[in-house]
Length: 352
Image 1 (cartoon, rainbow, N blue to C red):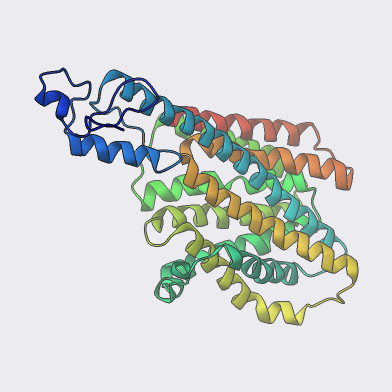
Image 2: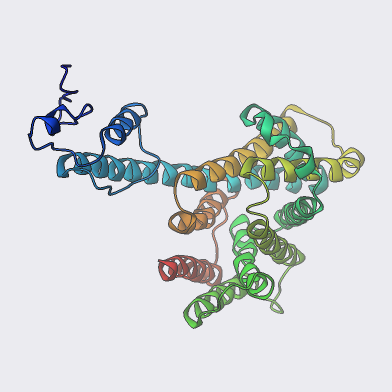
């Protein structure tokens, strides 16, 4: 460092004193000295920029900043995608453990209660003081949202009692159709013919899996009910997106489920053998971890880019059904799952 200014090791020179300008030399930076200094310290003081800006600095400095932003954005997208894939695989894993429990005679209400109660306890280390906002946790709107996901969890666990996991998840994905209809009606979202056509295609996929009127069992009916609850929950989540932070919203729904289902859980409590305790822990921890990873991923990358990865649940559920229960979807169910995947990825391409 000299009296004339600070010379970085990279290309270009950042003048912080303006001495060159006084001497008549052409200063390589056009921004005011104080601005250049603040920008230099800002870039040096943190590992990655919060936001990519083109700026109006000299060519070399602009290239360094833009290149860093692009690199960080690409790495962030990779990290977010990996988190999303892990999260969307953990949620069906939790339901696989839930199916093992309910198929062996454990009440879906008890499994659902332990999922919410243990999930809330497991979430505590990831929370800070601001997440425990009592005014928001007792907000009737957040409680209503929590009731919707409680209904969805109890319904899907009841469905898993008798139906293959892949078929349950296929019928459950009527949720996006319900969410779209409610969002148009209640939130004023714009209707487009192409998106409507893709959702109709997805609905046909659900019909191929559920086959109403053609030997559809009550389990598939519960899976459809779970999808309706979930679609309403998605709409409520969009409605309340600015009311509370994602972790406060997650804590809220876990507390609502734990409190509401406590009497039912106590009434249907089974003997806590080692196997039951292990499966309950897997069911709760996998579900909570999946939702937490989903929350973190959406903070790193835009939701529209991550949306296709939601359908990893269908793939994971099919694989878990094959591995743990030796069940493979029949031809019609497989066709329905394929239509759901086409509908989901097509909708995301339309948004882009």
